[in-house]
Length: 356
Image (cartoon, rainbow, N blue to C red):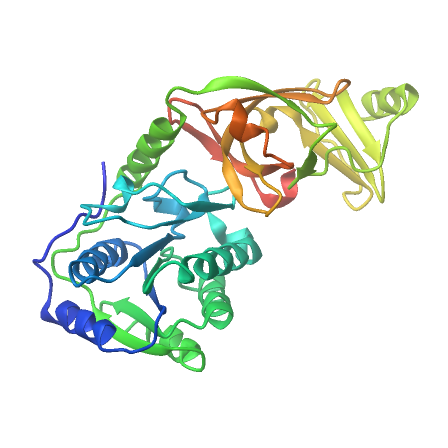
């Protein structure tokens, strides 16, 4: 299931935009597409890419719409180099990925900006035109996220899609850093319900994890990022027993650094009050089926896995992943995300950044 597909049944101003790109001498030319949800960004990107490829240009596609990702895997920023025309971005194989670890990027402005900048820079060395798809998160913190991306990347052109001038504020915010072209939304664009969006994501997850197998990951050898595990000295048996008796927890593991961190499971249901500046308590259940990223020495993401189990005493994790062993051997960091997913594609829920 894909929301966007290649079509030439588009408003005339889309063909005019192709001509603007063709007659702009700057190469590589970076073009960012911005618009709210269901504004037709990906459809426009697919149209532009195919038309430019027909004209003999080398095109790179940077997909940073983590909520409705085209290029697999989900929860990453990816770029691809099409070797010819394509019907929709899901047909493209990613050349490089940057791990975000969630489909809701509101708390990950820094990671989104860094990821897009890194992949655009990499793509710019390989293509004549770099087309950058973005999320539909365009108000409040979303507007600031777009400004940060544009300020970092400084695309030569930024195309803003709007229905009734609602993007005027954002366009003005971006103008110091880029040439803004404001276009109306195509009458062929239709809105998708939350259930439809969820079905699209489920299909992407299922496709990515098809054929996966369990891998044992030695957390003693790798860096562990995105979570408070293993920071500081391990708690003594007496300390774990103290936390258990005071708060009614089964404490599975814990560490003492600037503050205490414990991995726990609640025993009984009753209010528990503690100072969260001195103690971080992580529910073990929230780590089950959590998306993790295998990160290489360059900081890019080799691929994803689903965390199934951690043996804290031996520091070994069991992770379901489609990555072969020879790729896993290039991992230097296991980075924890904030979305729980089954290999069937079912999403079990998002987790707040500060919950892990």
